[in-house]
Length: 194
Image (tube, rainbow, N blue to C red; front, side, top):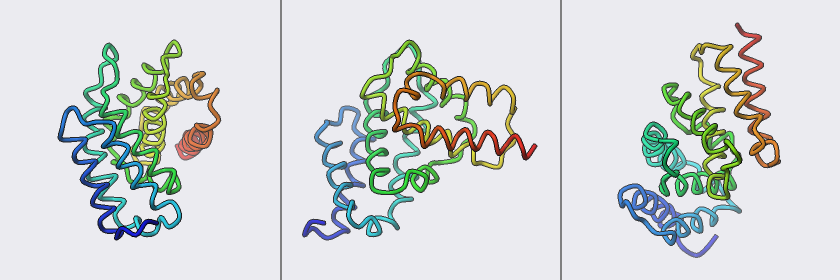
């Protein structure tokens, strides 16, 4: 950890995320500054622990909800969506991905949107390095939604989710496997609890 006080580093992260979400054309420099400051907690994540709900839920998730619901498969993914996904991934590098995923809002109304976006950006191998971060975030969010106590139209939903996670974009990348395994486990558990 640097000599900067923890409170100052957390403020830089918070203000950087707010800057990204309020200014339409934020720079890559802002994203990198946020990521660099998140990485300062690599050796002692506990210093960032109590601020995680504020950073993930209150700031990022609100903006991501809008980006998810407004997504249009005929247009490229918005840079803000990629930037916030990249920041989300870097929080996951510091903490366990389940801990961070569980801070995402449980809004079952976006479940179909998430499935549609995952299908769209991974169809015909459209996945790129930039969309990799979006895939990571959306798979994590899908997992979180599957943990929720809501009853879904099980058969149709299971088939859609399995079709999405069986895509080459996920099977060719070992990094997604822990999330996919947990999604499959949740689908299985929901079947035996019917």
